[in-house]
Length: 318
Image (cartoon, helix red, strand yellow):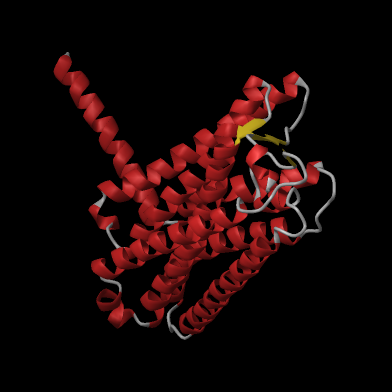
């Protein structure tokens, strides 16, 4: 009989056993978490309130911000709570939930970035057909289809992960329930099915990556054929933030999962995990707000309107 039924909790890897460093870890993660919440919520609110931003590109950007909020909320709050309470445990069901949502948000992120590349391809390479192809109904259908497919995939992936037998104890060498670290605890004859799923996932990810490369190759060729420098700059300015976000997401993921695995936990493993799980949600709002004139203009308009309303109310009360 599989011994996984006897595991009621897992022990996560802590950043330090020194109490002062645990408090420092809590404060640093709290600042990062609040920054991500503030940045992404601002983007969501601005896009929702400004009707000038009700276009396919910003619709997908709003979905990306929602995914970023979910991505960082899966791992950081639990790690902060463990540091604050000086514990390392996570329940079996909590670990299952972490794996499901980690897979869900990671795959949904990549799927959405692929859809956004298709949106930019149609906008630049086929501008006359853009409104016909990327109409409101098509955008909602693409986003909804992606969310549904990713939900099914994440459910199957999570079920397959926890169908294995754990013979290596319950010590997870990471600050959250990471699938490669869980596979280290698996019996040698039960984790092969999950390895097959990971290979399939890699193939699907590679297919999306190839689509991204082909799309941006076509976009670059089209941009270079634009006669005016102003036209080329305007076309590139709509693609550059997305290209930076894609590069950040892919590079951190590749670095995290293709680096040589170590038999014992190390500081490098923790730093790499922080890099790919925290850095993209932190950087995405900065990239889009700094490189996008429409977002910056809407932010100024929103904050200016709030200040005007506040001053008007103060005068009225006086």
